[in-house]
Image 1: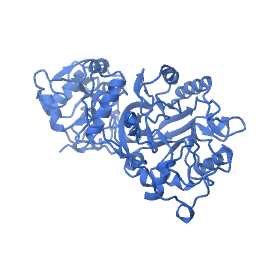
Image 2: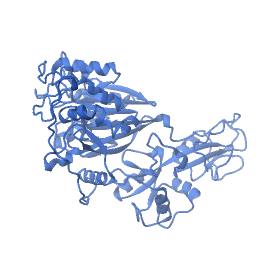
Image 3: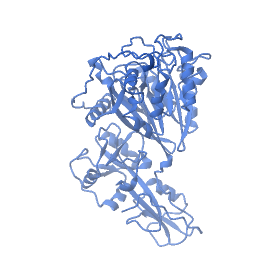
Length: 550
């Protein structure tokens, strides 16, 4: 079996004796460019005095080897998440069954040459070759379509499909049994002070960022936490959060020691959370907290400052809100696996109902679009991948409003790679602006909205967007999906729920022209919560009446 991580032989030292270089037709473009940078002229064939770079087939012994990872991809609005290795090889040989039946695998000429050597010739009509820079456009035009590309050619408009559950954009990726791996060799008859790069996918250059929607640990969510445990809401999606290098939570609510017992039937939209509930955020590995929420100031200055102190004590950085306007508006700058990532966010509905930060008062960051765009441009020019988030106006339908599109696109056009709506209780559509990904609303994360109005039963559905950054560049997004249960706990969707949800939103986003087939939508059990009040030592709560003016 070909080893998963061959160690290239140490480069020999000596004079550059090769008179020319021969590069095999299977060598991918990036490896070809690396070789040509050595300055040798191209040889017409593999002569004895030339440097030779070619696929290692069969895998040789002590040569300088380069491990090249390829990805199976499809246009982003593809419902299928993955295929088996058998389905892929059947597609190569021309089989007419499976998710992409009758659709040729798209690839460039070098990829075809490499896998023809590894797998044998493809079946008639099973492969179509195009220049690398035309593959994506053709795939989108031909949907459904699939393609094989080198890992370095990933871009956000591709969806990376897993093969037998393995995906090169996942943190736990292991190439040992992954079928889309090729090894390239460097060979010369004489010593040479030159070597190939070890691989095109270095796990030490890959960062995942998980963005989530609304968190509000109040009302029935808080009540359920008291009954079933503070950590209960995160039980089923905890692994997703912990896997991310940077896990984001937009917590709209202040933690406040003067907060009263949770009331699942509370009608007044003035909220606070028990300080004990921060244990949920730490348990799921929250790395970044967004404070753009409408309700951050509900219990006044004392509660906001107490909340900021709690985040600082636990080493959880925040943005989009703060101790004053300057603190609230400043970008949050992070580095992970060599990648520079900046978060910046704001709250536009400063109508007096939800006051934002001032020079002397804490609160959410008000939207100053001149300031935001200038910051984004500067950060982009400094090599940051910029993520911009909004606490925007709330709508209970998937479409983005024209004024919402204007504001989100302004951030993308300024240089934000990702623009995300953290405000949406009802998930909204997506789009690309150039290579920037815009998701107008992700839905809730932890909140008690179970859809007690039949028209909006879809409110239970949630997106959690896992963004992949590699070697300083935003390269991919994976849409994780969940369904809210127990007024508090998101659980991963079943395959049927997920397929229906994705198809619906790809249609609503204008990417697909067909409507998904009707499927049974799970209906919430809306039994009123009429449990005994949580008072005294059971909950350790003070009276509900706030001691600070909201």
